[in-house]
Length: 197
Image (cartoon, rainbow, N blue to C red; front, side, top):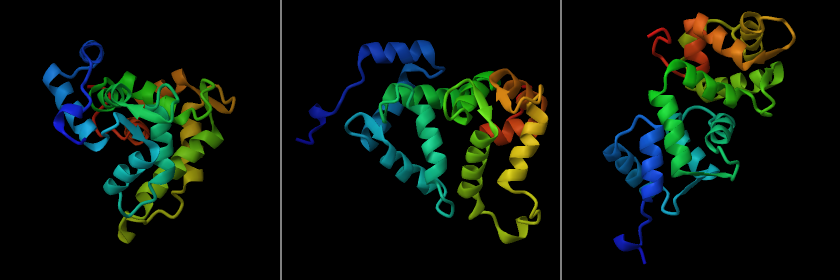
């Protein structure tokens, strides 16, 4: 027990699938896998472990609510656990994907009930979780705008994105809105690059 020979191996089928469906090289996939198995010896990342790891990046914020949304989006098969394929596919999109792929992934996170559109309550829940995640870590001298609340940010996003003013944002409206507004793109995808590049 605990010896190297009992360590889970990446199957050839999974390796081939990931080579064909991500921008990672074979060596990078193997490196990612070794790190994943080191942290998750069972080959699956639980929600509890995910929150525990994520919390390390935001020690002054409340990570739980935001982690719930990210975990749900990573957990493509809704099993309650993230396997290595789900993990690397999501990492590929968030780290290496083109802007439209990143936006499609982000849309899934914001569309909490998976009905194909984002209503104000869904947007508010995500924005509020982002504020909770970052809020405690923002230095007091940067908190100059007391009108910048999750409610006001949600209203601002809907003013820009809800083109037909029907109270919901479709995936197309979400993508167009983010592509047209660099600040929105960066905020809603947590990507600091320019989407036009």
